[in-house]
Each structure stands twice: as structure tokens, then as C-alpha cells.
Length: 168
Image: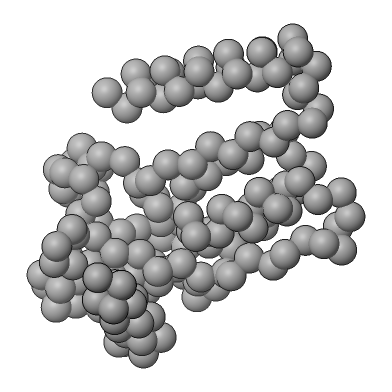
């Protein structure tokens, strides 16, 4: 399923790039492909959609194509950063580059959160509501290890919850 979906998307992007080349527009075009974490097919012990927060499933949600500017691969980038990504990919003067936030709040679970996490320069810190456990994954490919509660994650989560309640 994964490979077939990736092949379909790759073919669609290739057709778009070919059309841009044929019409002479490729040199003036930036393409940003974004997605989410995808399905979990027992890769990390779960079957379903969005039940685990980890670097392996959440680190690459976007890919810039045909852009001279490339974001630092060590800076976490969330979907809320898409306007900055597009801006930075299009500007000609490097002095106009807008810095990315450098941290991303993540959560799994639709109506009731299963996990909340914060990707930052400290790695991933997360809390699992089901297991009542704090853990940290320092970087992509690293194992999770126990962690102390993180006040920044708690404050970000509270702010997010309050903003969604007040917008109803």
C-alpha cells in the first residue's frame, strides 16, 4: 500500500514537472509537497492512523522541489510553517529569509489525546496519556528514553486546547 501510494504520487509530480518544462515555466516555479505521518502498519508496534509520535513518522512532512533555498534539516518544521517555507523558497535576496520557529507541537488522537509531543532542538519530548509516561527521543533513529515532565510542552498544549475551545 505504501509503495503503491508513493509511486502514484511520484508519477503525478513527474508529470507536473514535465509539463512545467514543456511550457518553459519550471525555472520560475517552486513545488512544495506536504503530507502527514501516514498509516502505521505495525512499524512501531501499532496498527492505525496517528497513534504514535516519533521522529521516524513525523520528521519529513514536506519536500521543496526546484528551490535554491533549503531549510536546515535539523530544524523541526510543522504545517503552520508552510507560508514561511513558500516565502523563503521564492525570495531572491537572502536577507529576506524569514526564520522558522524551530519547534513543533504534535498530538495524536482525535477527540481525546493519546500522546502530545514537542519537536525542538532538544529532540522530541512527549507524554503518553494511556501509559502516564514522559519520554524523550533525542534524534531520528534514536531510542526513546524516560524523561522528566516538560513545562514548555504542558504550556503549549494548554494554549492549544484553550484556543480551540475559544474558537468554537
